Amino acid sequence: MSVKIRLARGGAKKKPFYQVVVADERCPRDGRFIANLGQYDPLQNPPMVNLKEELALEWLSKGAQPTDTVRQILRAQGLWAKFKQPQA
Image 1 (cartoon, rainbow, N blue to C red):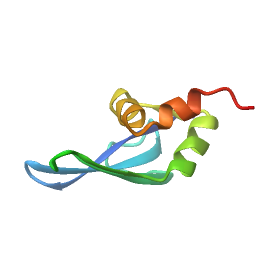
Image 2: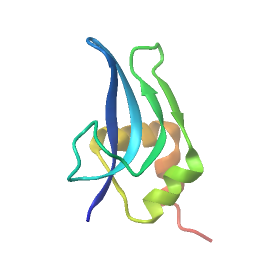
Image 3: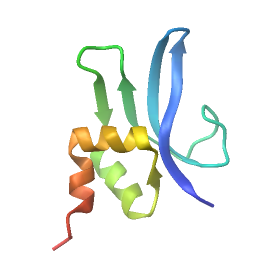
């Protein structure tokens, strides 16, 4: 079973709102997920990102693979650098 950190879409037509979730890659985009890591709203200026940092780092350390878009969000929040740092 491969676990991904990805976006699940919500909101109305032409007004997207996303949840950052941990899910089995075989589940549908908006289907069942394992954990909810936060929200992402691209319509606000600047885009609103609200992530649970400890939970995100925990899932990354367990081997969950982020999608390209989620990886960019993690980089913008500084979480990707925290994850890539060697642990002392």
